[in-house]
Structure formats: structure tokens, C-alpha cells
Image 1: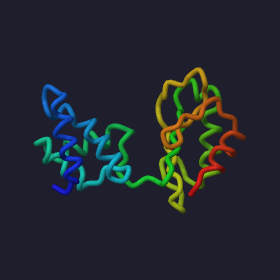
Image 2 (image 1 turned 180 degrees about the vertical axis):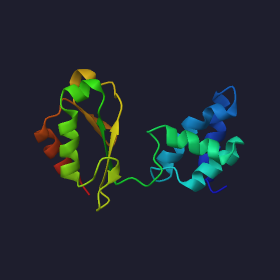
Image 3 (image 1 turned 135 degrees about the vertical axis):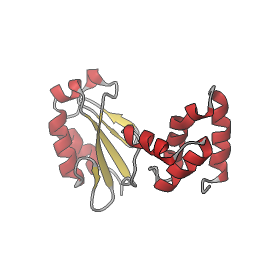
Image 4 (image 1 turned 60 degrees about the vertical axis):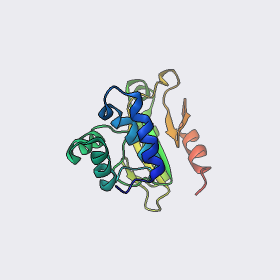
Length: 157
């Protein structure tokens, strides 16, 4: 197993909070993604399968089913544009188009310079302040096109 021992120790503690070890797979994958470069590599999926005594395809199925897991390295900054009903009705499509224009990244991809990854996400619970996006874990709500320019234009490399 190629996982760092500190992460394995953390996983050992994590599984004690669940009635069955494999029930901790999703939180364990979150920790791996956080600690190992922002994505779940094929090697990490194999390590998780070995750790949880699962077949690699079972872990792959979980990673590829849930949109919060990435299977390729993200850009240095991740912009997640909400496209659920409230945001869509209040201009999310235009916000997404502007985000792509400003960042140089297509939806679901990373910009050529590696600075931004742009994704769409389901409801982020900010419906009363739609439209919104999450930039590196920080919500930006009630967005206008000018807000997109200002927020993303101020992001450091």
C-alpha cells in the first residue's frame, strides 16, 4: 500500500466510528482526495480497495458515481458553479459561461495554464442567494457577471 502511514493511521481511527469498516469508504475517499493532491488516482483506488477488503472496481464505482470525487488532478483553484433550479432560474447559465470565459477552462475541465478547474454542482444550499459558485471552498452568492470578473480576476496564481 502506497498510502502515507499518517493517513492509514487516520483511516484506522475513522473506521472505528462505523458499524462496519466498509461504511467508512466515502469519508475515507474524501480524506484521500484532500491529502493526496485533490484527486483520487487509480493507485489510491487500489489502496482503498485493499484497505477495505473490496474489489478495486467497487471503489472505482463509488469514486465515479459521486461528483465530489475527481479522477484527474484539478487546477490550483476549483470553481464549482451551482446549476440547480434556483440558480438556473436566476442566471447560472450566464454565470457559468462567464466563469469559463474568465478562467479559460471549459465546463468540467482545467484551464490550459492549470490555474482553474471549472465544474458544475447540484444544490449547495444557497438557494435564497442564487446564483452562486464555490471557489476553493468559499461560497460567493447573489452573483452578477461583474462579480465573476472581480472575484476570479483577483485570484492569485
